[in-house]
Amino acid sequence: MNSQFFTAWIEETARTIAAHRDHLTRLDAAIGDADHGTNLDRGFTAVREALSAASPDTPGEVLTLTGTTLIRKVGGASGPLYGTAFRRMGATLTTAAGEAVRSAPDGETAVTLTELAAAFEAAVAGVRELGGASEGDKTMVDALAPAARALAGAARDGREPGEAFDAALAAAREGVRATVPLQARKGRASYLGERGIGHEDPGAASTALLFTALRAVAGA
Ligand code: ADP
Ligand code: MG
Ligand code: MG
Image 1 (cartoon, rainbow, N blue to C red):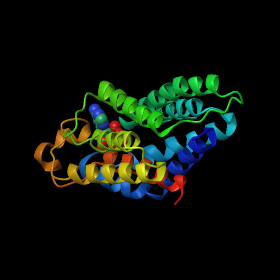
Image 2: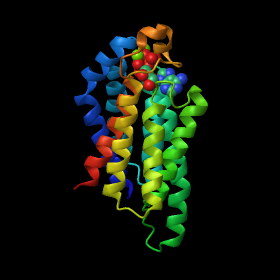
Image 3: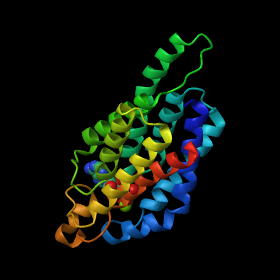
């Protein structure tokens, strides 16, 4: 997986977020302030512009620019959280790709599935540090953490990327479904107390879309 792959993933994420913008906003209307879809669509539109202006040429730079742009453009809770997630992934892959560059005479920076899984685990750690949420608090962590675990497990088992991404997407979607009966302990939805029970968490739902996009760019 090289910089073109990561650029394609982020562009597909931007398209997927745009296609689901109103759905995400409706989810946020039920337990938040009805801006999650517009927040992320604004952010990822700016990310697409930033990527096409800078055309970063390593996976780490693609993801770091994505994160920095989200922090700059998205005002809600999700901006700094997703921004941190992508920046942590970028930092992890910069190290990993740096090693790949040293070992490959042609300077090709290709990320392995194991490295990508490590990057997602760093993203989970970043979101947890910044937002203080654990799994079960009804946030994006409820989708991101199991998806990262599934990816790491698939990498350990020597699966092909396509299979690994299927497993990550299934885990993310299961995580989203599991937020429905929960009462939120972080973010705006926590202000609702028990009245938030029975609704899907918007940030968990948008996290699953990252994995929908990853699956789509990996091909059949
Ligand atoms: P805001 O709540 O500021 O309007 P958004 O609507 O864009 O921001 O994002 C809301 C989503 O952010 C929630 O559905 C939840 O998944 C996520 N979120 C909010 N607070 C936290 C937190 N402390 N840790 C992890 N995720 C959080
Ligand atoms: Mg909101
Ligand atoms: Mg808001």
